[in-house]
Image (cartoon, rainbow, N blue to C red; front, side):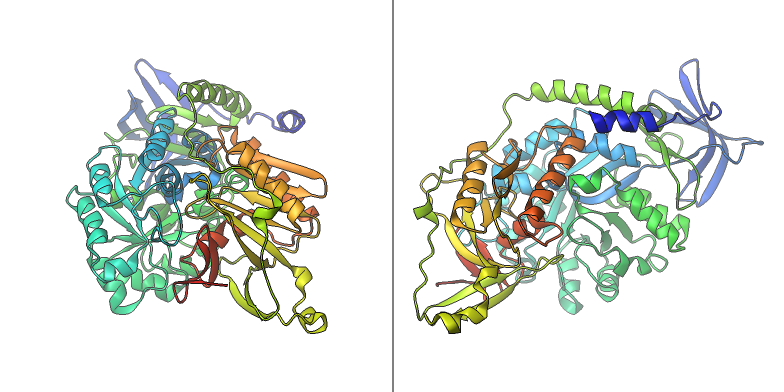
Length: 582
């Protein structure tokens, strides 16, 4: 409340001319109207009637400081669950930054709840004026059920039913690229079910080049957000795919890939992939547009990637500010890199205005809360029971060789440190065991399951722990602690909440409940961001040097990323694709 009052005191309403007026049954917007496909600016009026652009009239004498109108920004690939917000709340925050639509893959909640989770996301999205294109998650679980346990399985029969639905717009990222290249029957059935319904198939093929990239694209996959360098991005485009330049909370490829924009302005889209709450409240696709402008790239190329290409690629009727289009657009201050979003409209309805910001967010928030309550109980799948110290013991004897996961800041890759335990304290001391801590993964979907205990280096906890049910991709419980007592405190707090995040430093404990599938909170987005900051601060006080400890921990469970990971089935070497027995 204190922060809210201070911000309210600091924000002064901007005094401008009346650029918008109502006339009979239409609304008239006066200013500089950007026709991005034709790369021109029309100085004049735009008429909106019943949510549709009915006319655009060029006029003389439009002042230089009049608003600039353009189609809203679109995030071409995002997992909304990464924001820990329900879709309606995500949209409420996103429109503040000029985003009017997202291409979204409910992969995370799909791993927990299957179709039930996807349906929850779609129902929530209908509570607000915003454009969502939901995909059907193609790889649930991401690996075989013999490697990790998910809460659901979406096989080709389920995918076929999803692809026939009007509210499912595409087949989401096909991560199983070996299956595509090898012509795996189950994988190819999923792809064909999308293509026969006239829907796009998104890709996910990091490092795939040459003939393999061409074969992957030839299978019907038409985009990829996993390219990380210029050459890989160029190969992606030359193979006939759209390149989604990703700049998210975890993976950041904007700097490496944006140089391709002048060469391929019609083949590039912008996306975040994972956008965590503390990042979303600061900005969204607008920040990437600004960065590209600051680097001197052509404004029409930038806006084509940010506003136009997703609409064209997915065949969407979201509007490009032509007569007859839905009146979905934004008003910005100018065309400099320092532009500000003044207003956002979706289908003719004003969903954000900087001059009535606090009134707007309060009324929208109350509306979302009241409508969310009508969705009844939040869906979840949680059978895990509290643990004891005996459950998390790790038996290491003299003569054993142990494998330690080596985590590093800012990277999803891990090392695999092999240590031969001699039993001689002088020889064993060289491995600096004080930096090695326990990591626990606990199956939350099956009552009576036994936790898997491993060792990890890099978190540096002195007196504390962290635990969460955000653990890619199956979202079992994961925890890391300085000792068994703190580890158990964190684990059992998450279990009692039936999902969420917990941080401990000494006797201090902070938690963020995530009652929707153990991934999402129904709270205000700014409150979620504040809690996330609190969690990170507590982990830092416990001695952890990592910039994003919860994100790093979440990816310790993803077995498809090299090299050593841990799932609810055991310690997994992703390079040999086998479990390590000891």
